[in-house]
Image (cartoon, rainbow, N blue to C red):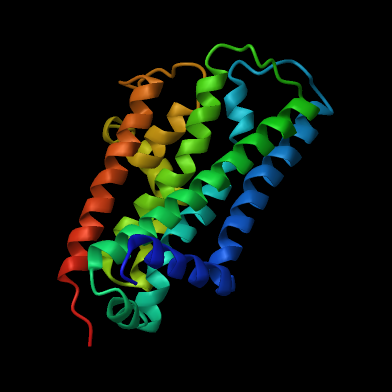
Length: 247
C-alpha cells in the first residue's frame, strides 16, 4: 500500500465485501426516498396546493434516512475498531494519514453518490405526486445542499468515530443524537439558540427555500457551519489515528 490509490483500492474492497457497510447506503436511500414518496403520495391524494416551502416535503424522508447515512460513516472505520482489524490495516498501511485519508476519500465519494441519488429521488417523488415548480427561488440551492449534506454527514461521523476509537460508543452516541438529540435540544427554550449551530440542524436548514424566524444565519451559512464541523471532526480523527496504539 505504497500509495494513496492503493490504500483507497483496499478500502473499496473492504466496503464491497462487508454486507454491513454496503447495506447502509441502500437503507439510507430507501428510507429517504421511500418516506418522502409515501408522505407526498398521501398528501397529494388530498391536496395539490403548493406548500409554502416545498423543501419541507422534499427532504422529509431525510429526517429518517440521515440516521443510516451517519451509520455509514461510523461503519467505515468503527467496524475495524470493533473487530480489532484496525491493527492489520495499520500494518498494511503504516502511514496512518494515508490510511485515514483513503477512508475519508471513500466516505466522501460514497456520500456524494448517495446524496445525488437520494436528493434526485426525493425531488422526483414530490414532482410526480404533489407537483413541483422547479423555478421556485432557492430550489436549486436546496438541491445542492441536499446532495452535499450526505458526504458531510458521512465524514463527520467517520471523524468522530476515529476520535472515540470505539464502534459501540460511536453507534450508541451518534445515531440517537442525529435522530433525536439535536431536535430535542432545539425544542428547549434558551437552548435552541445554541442548537441551531449544531451540524445537522445547520445542514438541514441549508436545504430550506425560505427563512425561518429565530435562525441567526442564512442558508449558505448553514451549509458552511456544517462544513466547518465536518472539517473539525475529520482533523480530530486524524490526530486520534496518529496517537492510536494497537496491540
